[in-house]
Image (cartoon, rainbow over all chains, first blue to last red; front, side):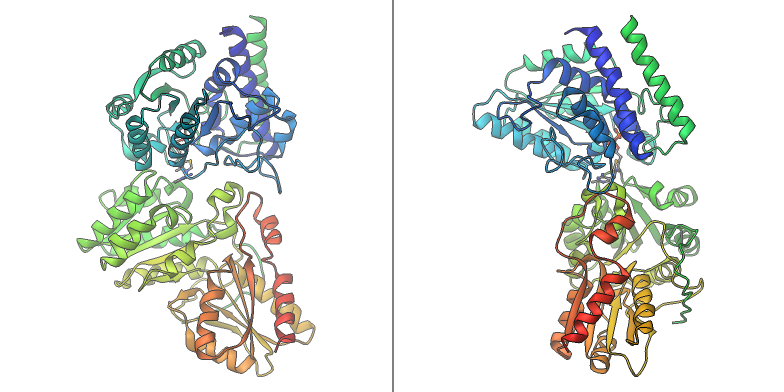
Length: 277
Length: 324
Ligand SMILES: Cc1ncc(C[n+]2csc(CCOP(=O)(O)OP(=O)(O)O)c2C)c(N)n1
């Protein structure tokens, strides 16, 4: 992996995610921005896909189970050439192809529809199973929120994935420590998330979710394990890189125009810094 | 029942959710048996205050609606009066079997609250837009199903809910940005429709609920200006339906239009049609979402898109009169 290029891509995704949400003025900034690094690694260095044929049979799949992170995916798909990136600046406008929550019938690049938390874990299992039955090499990557782990369905999906030895399936848990009403520990405290995932039989690693090299290596490591599904717990900061959202770990944000200007400038600056390095 | 209509068609500066949150806060102080269970959406309906004021009786169950509904049923079994909230999609579809079996079938009362009724889910889009939540609760035996129009009505309903100790109840409501139909202090009786306009010359009756009540009142004005008299009823209780009132309207006006922020295949229009088929077969037109999925966008756009406007009610009234 070209670390510099992937860091640059992550910075591009952050800037673009902000632009997408800014086009509407408000939205799920926090849980989108913190995924820029993993999206950069997946789409820049790991996944097989063809932007010109989004439903190419042998592609790798992404299931954004925390479906409210649509904007970071729309930004990524735009940058990777699924559509001109400006198209996503219609976020949540009437008849848009880019709704708050991800929709496989509307947006090129979206493999499964999500929005009701918990359900993407199961549909990801089904997709991994189907690809296995057909003997495809395709892998399925599913991104879950730590709040989302409250749903019992997640654990049912883990159980099934383990029982069916789905080694073509990799779950990420975006462990940012926050959900909608506040800190995860205050809403419904988990015990050790990685230990729980491991106890369900997933090959589990926990890493810094903003370190692209660590993410890449963890994915390689997971893919070398045969006969078990994997899980990578990403320690992240909700709102990472959005100046108005990061300090308070905001879930959804509706900043003033000057706060937007400041955030966009900071994201541009961050990108420039990496480009010059 | 003591109802005063404002008639200005202006948005309430207050958020409708506060009718629920502030009233529950007051009720919980008076009645220690009341408990509240939420699924990581307290901030959306301003009920964090309940957890602050009554930490031993107001709970965050996390994003786990099925479990939360079961917990609510278990609390009810110990004699608690339990309110349970999530967005309407999740407090219906995501926990239906638990509500059906562990609560309703087991003879336990849980007061289910579903916020973001119908198209008011707006920017959260189709995945969050409950257009069938009413249907799901209508189909549970012994249930009560409510679709309030505004702040005053939601407040009045909230005050009555703890008194219902039989069957599950479901209240679908809009969080904010609602037209204020009734003056504060208006009181309503669950199970009784509210006649808002009535005359001997009425040629049809519009039976509406929720955010369609104000559209129905505007339709009444426009039709009156054209010389067409119609009766208007706010039927905020879908179940048990005020069948006597429906039958009377059918007999006296001979034509019915129903108007709802819900799929017309299985909501207010359907329960009214069911009643009419048994008691007084009458021509009927259905204003509401015509068997479609939800989608994302501003609420105003969605109301146009799904035909939930004054103009849609006016057209339906003219159609139904022509069919008499
Ligand atoms: C079944 C379900 N219940 C509730 C919601 C509303 N909701 C959307 S995002 C969210 C919080 C998600 O927290 P987490 O999974 O930790 O995501 P992140 O913090 O990474 O954004 C909630 C409760 C939903 N989308 N689906």
